Length: 261
Ligand code: DAK
Image (tube, rainbow, N blue to C red; front, side, top):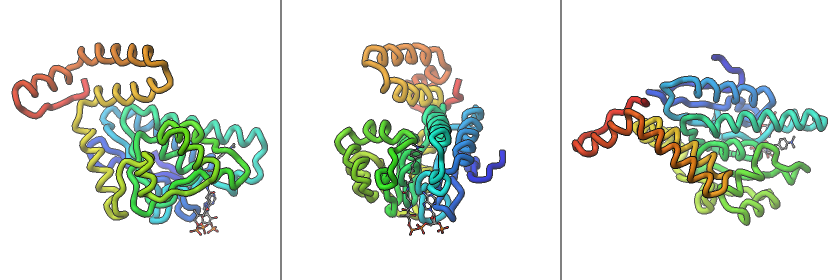
């Protein structure tokens, strides 16, 4: 499928790369871009051979510099609500993809850009990455999930500081506070993303899918309900060919070959 504001491309065996592609506006998110993000997530989800998604921004300056301010300036309350709903749908579609999404942050990840990165399963940052939620400077609150996902990622106190001051943090600090998993030189960002995606792609696909789902679904449940889901998933995976293959391979001291069944 062709997109105007995104590039979605399979780059190798089941690994897709999604690039937000509006470099002249530092990849700022318009309503059209959000609709395309949702469609792109659906496209990846529909591919049974998909194993991982890398999400990044075009150019060398920004991942995504936020929601497009030129499109927000005159929004009515109804427009604003629709805009938020489109983002929430698109970001939730990425979060609930059956395969992991890894954000590769190559520069500014501000406002909606930081929120897009947070909707991915984890974040790898280039050493020029800058994160922040500057909405308080614009007279709005974060509208794309930032008030909910940031505290879940970095803890309430640090999230509140960043949300209420609008302070921007560089890659090293972002790693220190748990927002980012790895920081690498700019020219090694894609290689690091690919390395992680390949590691995951080599694992049992159903086990990866269920594990991701359990983490995301379970965080919104009480411990007993979440553990009950985990138990159920474990039982289901016991019926998979991949479970038999993984355990046989271990006992036979050979690498496992998984088929996602
Ligand atoms: N929107 C639109 N255009 C943007 C943009 C943005 N967020 N960020 C950058 N651009 C555009 C600039 O206008 C400029 O365009 P031209 O003038 O060349 O036409 C071009 O990208 C290059 O930017 P700069 O010239 O400013 O580049 P600098 O290197 O000087 O500065 C910067 C880079 C990232 C520090 C700066 O561009 C900047 O501060 N950008 C804005 C960052 C920001 O505030 N982002 C958060 C946006 S707020 C809600 C709905 C949505 C949201 C919340 C609530 N509701 C409905 C409740 C979400 C909010 C946000 O994401």
